[in-house]
Length: 115
Image (cartoon, rainbow, N blue to C red):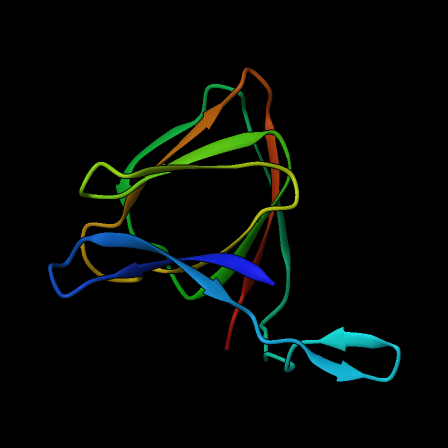
């Protein structure tokens, strides 16, 4: 299963990386290894939400439930995330990234902070 990782590079800027989450056969299903989490936080951002450069406070999964967001890294790369997209945000240091809600609709999403 592919997800997007957002991380801080040696240049102190945030970057994207496509990563594969390894799934193993567990009976009739496939599943990843269990990852320890601190909990879950549901959030909603208005249609015009914009946050200037900022790092994440801790490693966390970010899953968009509805609406769309653009994340921009320091080198100007922009990726758009919509419903069902999963990002592993690990840019806890450096300048961070810009967040823009796009598409004229609020964005509902989930943070899952990791231990």
